[in-house]
Image (cartoon, rainbow, N blue to C red):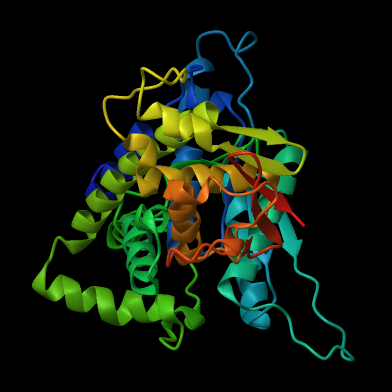
Length: 393
C-alpha cells in the first residue's frame, strides 16, 4: 500500500499542490488517462512517481466508498526504466532500486536493457547525451503505445530548465533554443510528453523526499564537470546565484516569454506559407509575384494583412522555411542559422526574382549578395518564372 504522507511535511505538501496544479485534465479525473512515467531512480523522477501515485490513489479511493461496483476503473500508471548499462553494477543497482519502489507502490514496471557491444566490437556503447536521450525517447514511445498510454511524464525541474537555457545560450542557439524545455510537447501524434515539475526547484524535491523518508539513487557521473551540462550545474549556475539568488526563476520567466514569442512567430509563419507558397511532391514553391503584390494591395490579389510588411520580416521567413523543411521531411540537422538567414535574404532580395527560367540564384551574383544555389542536405534553389523553387536533389 502507498505510505501515508505526514501532515508535518511542508515541502511535500507544496509538491502535492504543484502536481495538482500542473496536471489538469479537461476530461475529468487526472487518473482517467493512462500515463507512462520515466524513472531513472534519481530524486526528481522518484518524487514524480510518488506524487502521481498519490494523486492516482486519492482519486481511486474517492470513488470506492460510494459505489464500488460501478466505480470507473483507474487507468494504468506505468513506470519505465532504461538501463543503459554504462556504470556496470551501479546501473543494475539503479534498476533494482526502481523495481523495489514499484513493488512498494504496486505499480507495473517496464525495463529496457540497452544492448551492449560484443567483445569484438571496435566501439563501445553510446554514451553521448543526445544518443542516450534518443534511446530513452524511443523506449518511452514504444512502451506508451504498448500500454495504451496517452501521456509520458518525465521529471525535468526548474533547475534543468535554467541549465538547458544557459547551455543553449552559450552555444549560440536560435529563438527555439532560448525558449528552453516546453512543459507539454508531442512525442508523436498520439502521445503527449508532459513535464509537470518544470516549475519546481530541485532542492525542494529533495527536501520533500527527505520529509517522507523516501530514498533515491545518486549517479556519481553527474558530478563530473568535464561534461558541459554538469559544469553549468555545479560551477556556473551556483556562481550566478551567489550574486543573483533568484536567477533560476528569472531564467524560467525569460523562457516562458520566449516560448510565447516563438508561438506568435510560428502562427505568422503558417500564414506566410499559406499565402505565398505551394508544395508539390518534393518541391517547395515560393510565388515571388504574390509577395511583391502584397506590398501594393491595389495591384495584388492576396488576401492578407498589408498594413505592415510583416511578411518580409526575417524571423517570420526563417520560421516559415523551417516549417517547410519539416513538411517535406528534409533534414534540418546541417542547416545553421547562417543558412536560414541566407535563404531569408534570398527570398527578400526581389532583384533576383527576375532572371531567366531555370537559373539558380548562384548564377546572379553581381549584386554583391551571397545567393548560393545549394543548401545542406542536397537542397537546390532555382528561379523559374518569378518563382523560387527549392527541391531535394
